[in-house]
Amino acid sequence: MDFSSKQQAAVFLDRDGTINLDKGYFYLPEEFEFEQGSVEAIRLLNQAGYKVFVISNQSGIARGCFSEAQVDHLHQWMNEELAKSDAHIDAFYYCPHHAELGVGSYKKICDCRKPAPGLLLKAAREWNIDMKHSYMVGDHNSDIGAGTAAGVQPFFVRTGHGKQEGKLLAPNVLRADNLYEVVKKYILVSN
Image 1 (cartoon, rainbow, N blue to C red):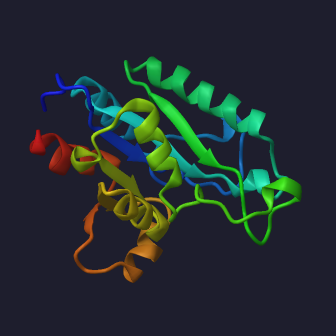
Image 2: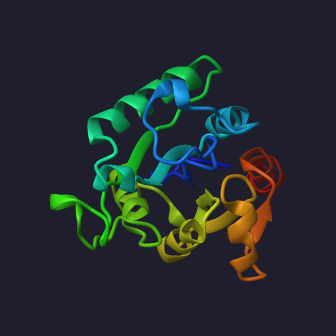
């Protein structure tokens, strides 16, 4: 794809269950495991010129399981690990809120918790992203909803919660076994 114009295309990625194994509420690097093929997929997207963003609901913050600083530390560690394979995430965006189960200021209805498109739209503004040529990949129906609402092409993966949630998807949603398959079979071939 030619990114010589001012706007760039991006791939927005859910984190838990898409990039890494979903182990529930965790923040420690030693608990983190990349999904098979996800590091290579991110490297291929970087090489192809796409901006790569993580878009993640992190209600563990709202529930008091861990802090925003701990999530930020994990994201820094993720990029350090990715760098060992010549890959990187351009920016991490996460929602720390939950309308029912949040504590204190984190208990609220917001526009950043997927399926709301707030985080994708924020990234698009901050990075001047061409949403018509961008993608969202995730293992939850909320990922598909956020991508659709933001005006990007959504892809559903069968990793993480994908096997259970895939049964609830509309038949026209594009599906793949994992992030690597989405990148190789759909995104890079559209270049």
